Length: 141
Image (cartoon, rainbow, N blue to C red; front, side, top):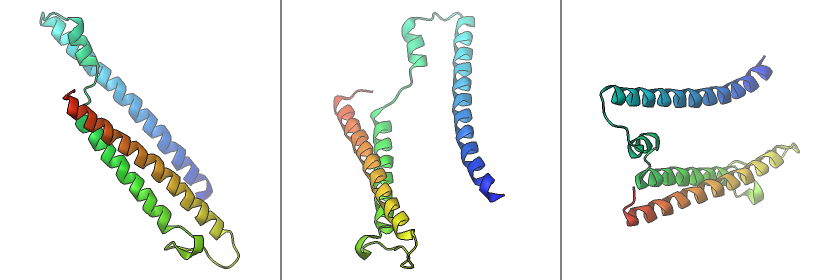
């Protein structure tokens, strides 16, 4: 029974995330249409600049800085996990069993995967932080 529940739960979560994202986009468009309808009913002129300002999301340099910090922290966390599960030459905290099983291979492959994820997340985070610092210096929104 567990053999089928785990994969179903995994794919069910992916479907739930996609549905929630689509539903949020539909709700945001519905609210925008209601705002525009209310503005038209009250007699306010709708110029193209105002419509663009309503449709285009505002992303400040603080958002980039926050994203950069979170992604860099994820990279550091994955690096720590890679070091924690490393099985090479006894340097990691958790080692594979010496009973001749495949545990050593699996843990070693997992630690390399953690290092790859650490490099990807940390480099993305550092990129976001640099972008935030550049945007802040220019005083651009």
